[in-house]
Length: 330
Ligand code: AHG
Ligand code: MN
Ligand code: MN
Image 1 (cartoon, rainbow, N blue to C red):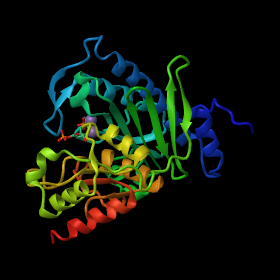
Image 2 (cartoon, rainbow, N blue to C red):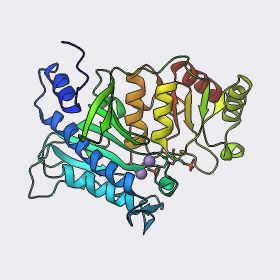
Image 3 (cartoon, rainbow, N blue to C red):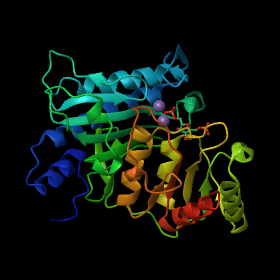
Image 4 (cartoon, protein in one colour):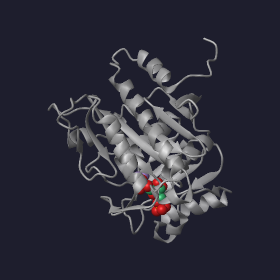
């Protein structure tokens, strides 16, 4: 087949599905629906400055964080795009405290979706890149309709993981465990086109570390020493403050992203199920590493829906060096 420049995400998903004899098409439909939600969110994110959708919704989410109108909009788009398709048995969102049941009037399916509908929302007004992060699991509970048991699965059980980065262009990156593939939205035709087939993190890659150094004094001695050593080794600091944007740069350029635990946030800030685990699946599929400081994020057994975790994502050798430095904390 000649290099066909126009591989749409739908065509790519179908090609991937053909390689999995057990695939039923439901899974492909979920990815297709997420791509539709991403297009709708992208349109609003790119118009944020023009319509009265920027700014606070005057509410706080389960984490006590100020919910921006765009957070709410993105959450509603994800729900309304996926609640009626019959492929999911339960959903979870960063913006919703409890498991989100599929409405009774709709049938349930064999899949589970967890998502951060809009990541980096504190940056909305500053026109800084934002993102959406999603994680897909298989239903494991016995009943017809899913529940918490289906949501509290470890990262290594994920069927698929992905993110959308709403930046200078809108990109959707996903993996089903058969490589990491990136698609760029061509707005003139409203299609995500394959632009980054088979993404691999460059190793050693660029000397970049990404962490909010404002918290240096709250870090453990091992964390402080590790960052000091990166500086001595000539690393540059790049920190956008949107996890998806910082992650996307790390995947493309190499280096390491860190959101450590600290004296104020002993479990870290980022959430395991819909921020850390999906990005960990992606980076490990791309040849990099993930860690909570002690071991791969994918092996962490979740206990609560919104539980937080320290998070390290980057090239394998930098993750290993970071884990060694943190071991010295005892
Ligand atoms: P969200 O907007 O989904 O709540 O995520 C915000 C997160 C993440 O995007 C970013 O890495 C982190 O907050 C930045 O936190 P600090 O401002 O503490 O550095
Ligand atoms: Mn987030
Ligand atoms: Mn969010």
